[in-house]
Length: 270
Length: 267
Image: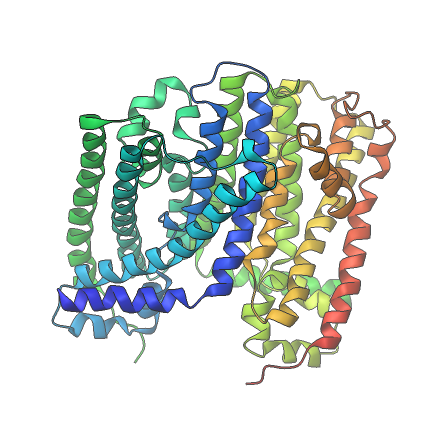
C-alpha cells in the first residue's frame, strides 16, 4: 500500500504549489457561476413550473463551479508527457501495480486541484454573497445533517469515479500517443452528462431515468441530489452503491485496457 | 515580402503542419464542434422547460448565440499567438526571435499556429444562425447581410482585442493566465443571451467596458426587426459595432506598453 500512498501524496503536494492557477480558476468560476445564475433567474422569472426550485438550481450552480476541477476533463498531462518523452519506461520497470500507481497519482492530482477551489468558492458563495446583500443568490447549506454527510461521502466517491475516468483517458493517450484529440471528444460528454452544464433535473423529463443511471451522474448530480436531501435512507445508500458500481466497472475496464495498451507500447525517445 | 503575402505564407505553413496529423486535426475539429455545440443543449433544454425568457423566443436567442460564436471563432483562429504568448514565447525566450525579425510583431503572432479545429465552432455558429433565420423569420436583405458582416467584424475585433490584452498581461506574469477566459469564453457565454435579461450593472459592463452588447446585442435586435425593450433607438445597432474596433485599437496601445516593458527570460 505504501508506494501508492506515496504516489498520491507527492502528486497532491506538488499540485498544491500552483496557487496562482487555483486563484485564477476561482475568479473564472465565480464569474461563470454569476452569468449562469443570472440566466437561470431570468428563465425562472417567466413563472413556468420547474422541476427544481430556483434556490436549488443556484446552489447547484455554485457547487458545480466549485467542483469544476473534479470532473475528468482531460488525462493527467504528466502521463501524456511521460509517454511522449519515453519516461513511461521507468513506470514500467517499477515493481508495483502500474494501474494502481497511476490511479493513486491521478487521484492526488485531481484532489489537489479541487480542494483549494471548492474552499474558495464556498467562502465566496456561502459567506460573502449574503454579506453583500445577494442572499437570494447564495449557496445554501445542506437540507439536513444526514444529507450533508451523505453528500460528503458521495463527493469522495465522485473523486474516485473521476480518477477512474481520467485513467481511461490516460490509457487512450498512451495508446494513441496524443492527448488533445481524445480530450476534445471527452469534454463535451462530461459537461453535459455530469450536470455541470445544467442541473440534470432541468433537462427534459423523459430523459430523467437514463440520466440518473449513466456513470457521469455520479460525478456531480448524485452528490448534489444527496445534498438537497432528495434521496434519504436506503435510496441514498442505493445512490452511493450506484457510484461504487461505476467506479468498479470503469476500473476493471481501465485495467484490462491498460494491459493491452502497455503490451503494444512503443517507448519514445532515449 | 509585404504583410499580406507573409501572412498567407504563415497560414499555409501552419495548415501544412496540421495536415501532417490529419486524424488529430479532424478529431479536434469535431471536438470543437461538439464542445461548443453542447451549449445549444443547455439553451434548448431551458426553452423546452420554460417556454421563453423575458419575452424572447428560442429562434431569436439563437441569432445572438450564433453571432457571438462566429465572432469568437474568427478571433480565436487569429489570436492564438497572443493566447499562448506567455507559455510558448515569453517563458521559452522565443519572443526574442520574433523581435529580431524585421516584420510587424502583431502579424507574426496572428500568423502563428492558425488552428483548423476552430472551424468547428464557426460551423456550429453558422448552423445556429441558419436555424434562427428559419425560426425567427429573418429577412437577409443586402442591408441585413451588410449589418451582420459589420457586426461579426466588430465582434471579431473585440475578441481579438481581449486576446491581445491577455497576451499583454503575460509580459508581467510570464504565463498565460486562465483569468482571461473570464472575458473570452465568459463573454461568449454572456453574449449568447439577449442583454435585456441581465441586471443593470452587468448590462453597463457589457456595453461600456467590454462592448460585447455593441457588437452583438444592438445589431441583432435590428436584424430581428424588434424594438429594443431597453429603449435604445434602432440606429444604434448600425454604428455600435465600431466599438469593437475601438477596443482593439486600445488593446494594441496597451500591447505596445507591454512590449516596451518586456525583458527576455533568457535561454
